[in-house]
Length: 207
Image 1 (cartoon, one colour):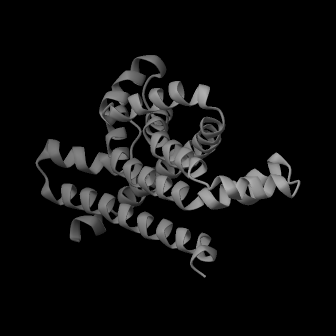
Image 2 (cartoon, rainbow, N blue to C red):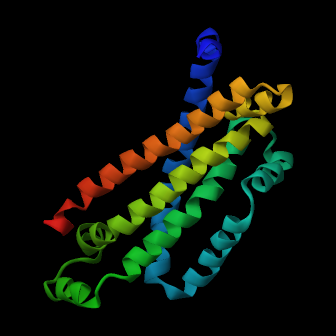
């Protein structure tokens, strides 16, 4: 605690960068992955190559992605953000695809029988029904991104990884504990917030 209090400004700066890069990566991933997941669910011809591509990205370690993007776009915030977006897309994409695919065909046929337009049916029926799985994918991605954002420190993006890797380099257990505990706490907080959001959004399914 004494170390934390004497370095509180640096700690707050590291937490802010870590949260900012994590939120940015997850939001960009949602914008990319949800439409792609819907596209894959609706058009089976494109689903296989797209799903295989992002499943391939999923098996690549986060550090390897960071190393691969470094020679292309250099170091700093944006290369780290790109690597985290690549990491975050697959769980959201797969869950969106499964959520749309698992909708009972009778629900779709009923909506079509009532003369509902495609866009309206997608926004008012399919996406709300797929929402529990989509949010589960977002929860998985968010926790993975927060944990992997520590590696962004390797390419000069900052964040809580600076405390962890500086602590390792200097053999300073105080920095290691502060950095590691903060990342773990952030992961737990985000998981809880997204779980509560999921419960709120899907309340109609339990009533």
